[in-house]
Image 1 (tube, rainbow, N blue to C red):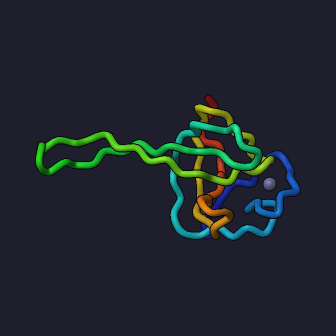
Image 2: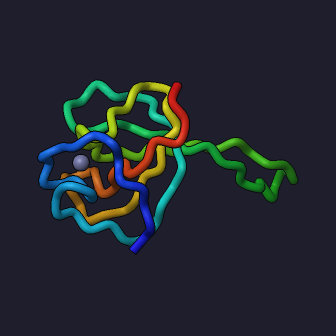
Length: 104
Ligand SMILES: [Zn+2]
């Protein structure tokens, strides 16, 4: 189990790792919120460098991950958050926002 700070707000979401019954395990990542227009989901984007052998340079890569967003950690576009892997919550969601790192 990853040690996490409990958010100040309360919520009644059953898929909340703090106030519900959602277990988190696996990977934790830091990413930037790029879309928060869904009710309990957000899209986060990861930026990283990958070495390109052919051109002997680093290429900037990015990947987008849909994450579950609970009411106790409100997110907006531009926020840097920590997400943790959990069981699949829908067809594409298997991560949940667990911490606000930097607000936009
Ligand atoms: Zn909660």
